[in-house]
Amino acid sequence: MKNTRKRSISLSLLVLLFVVGLATFTFKLIINANDWALSPFNKHLSGVALNSSGKVIDRNEVVLLQSINGKRVYNSDLGVRKSLLHTLGDGSSHISTAIPNLYRAELYGYNFITGANCPHFLNSCKDIKLTLDSELCKLALEKLGSAKGAVAVYNYKTGEILCLVSTPCYDPNNPPIISDNLSTNAGDNYDGVYINRVMSATYTPGSIFKLITSVCAIDNFGEKLEDKVFNCQGKEKVSGGDITCLSSHGNIKFKNALTRSCNIYFANLAMELGKEKMLHTAQSLGFNKSFNINKIQTKQSSYEAAEANDYNLGWSGVGQYKDLVNPMHMLILMGAIANKGKAVIPRMIGNIISESSVDLFTGNYDKVETEELMPEKTAEILKSAMRYTVQNNYGDSMFKGLAVCAKTGTAEVGENKLPHAWMVGFSSEEKTPLAFVVISENSGFGIRAAAPIAQSVLQKAANVITKSK
Image (cartoon, rainbow, N blue to C red; front, top):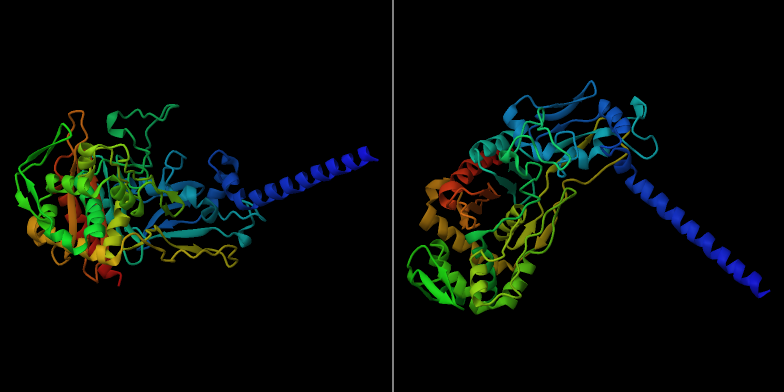
């Protein structure tokens, strides 16, 4: 009798496990069937579906990618094709941030019931309208020139990304030949060509990190921060090492220290605040966190000071030591400072438009999601300091009519290489709510290499957003 009961219990458990397993499989099949069926390795499905796939268009309805007679056809302009490589991909799976790969179910009209090859009258393939302006992206690519780097601009009120460009790049109509380890036949100029540097890279920030140190100081000292004075003699010995500055500023206060980018001031500020407060602020601002941008997980920025002595902590406060930042994260931070501490999460998808009378899928792509990254008062004080920096250092003539708040950075990367050049900021004008980030790798000083790129791209972006209203 006991044996019969044990066998019944065992059989019941096996049946239960089977039912749970079957339910789990069915759930995953329904949820992930489109990804499995239309993955690049299933060319017998995705290739057929491509015959009737929808288009990808920019914010002005310029066709960027479409299918003609079963072939992938890009825009006729070489500059547009190259500048949007990391957004549109090249038909392979090497570029992980390619929108056609991430939204292939919508483009190809796949659904769980009819699959990838449904009858034409049931076809539910859709066009994807991006928020990007293809001409603005083309300009950004031109301004980056031969340098590796990234440029991004977004509307910090609506979240719409107007420009997203990563270099190096290539013409998707003529992709480089690759070996099994994804190295190209095109030499060093194509090193890292498959990486979307806006989304999937991190860099030493240099002086743009002084904005993060500033947030920590404002949160802890409030308005009294403006009266905090440090003496800069161009060099200061700390824990047996030298913290250096490009100039001897003498006694200097916060706003002028940010304007003159004084290393001594911000190193002392970081040391006085201490590693715990600096780590807490970095964490609250999104360091060691990934952001989701239209199914793309950004690479995490990192701030590591837990084991730092005063010397290393000081250098971390000016954006060196082990500091690493992701360009998209910096763009989000600029949006937060401009937007009273609340960051609107960027997006590239403007709308997904059905081509069929039978719409089997509807998504809310204009939803504005916000995340509070800093107190409103902190954002106001830092915004004022960044505005002061532009007015008293870079000059308002650089960004005519935009009332820009910004900070440049020159990030030392060692190995006898030129520094990375940065510029981040935003327009504080109501009619042009634009935040931007520019990094030009191994290009020297931020004010010389990154600022001219930011100037050209932001002026054109302002025209784009003004015309669209």
